[in-house]
Length: 326
Image: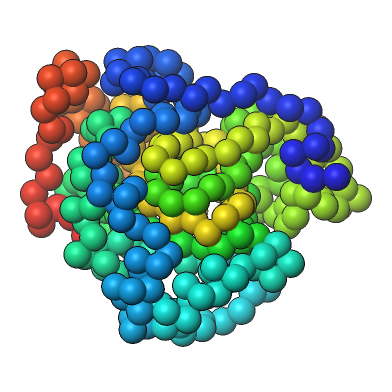
């Protein structure tokens, strides 16, 4: 029995085409509901150009390091850093199977690893704006965490590989996952399922459930009550995973994906709670709430006309180069 066969089924995630910004904001962004936009990547050169063979041909000599650090944080296991050459890595991706999955290149900052490819994923879909993550924040710790979260990340993997941990994205951000090549299966759980998913005490956005297909129900009995939604993401499609929604993915064919995280008025309250609740010092926690609530109120006022600007095709508030990280 697989995770898709187990337990109760949640509502289907809607698939939409020609989705206006107003409809997205009202029906999904502020409603905190996931959606797949099937035509969100129109005009992207990456959809036509990026294949495993492309990365092997253009970047075959590149060397990079992969590690299972996330597995170590949650399960106390996983390999240490391993260095790969891109050509060798792509060969493993193409030969990957369910029984012998290739390593998974994931959460790599695109502009750091492949700065020449930035123009291949433009224009970015309007749904990701406004995004307050890359802006200037006076508190250094807040600035570093939020600015890093704004980076566009790259994922390349082979059939049988999967994201190592069921999770929701840190700082209660929204996630936008854009499928460029290949096919993935996603499993998502709404925030009201958290009590069944066994969050790790010191990392409560990470689940201790190690295998959704073969869960240890003696150790995690409440998981039998969890309600999930399972679906597929195809090339050219965008998946919106709202704030606090648990999710994980399994790769069905050689796959290339990019992602970006966002915060704005729709999920700023979740971010404030996320940050404040993780401050061990109660004075710092209260101070964080005050500081972030004031910043959120100002940005909400500044962006009050954003839907009208989006309809007109105007870019969001300009982010100065020094306000970005990397």
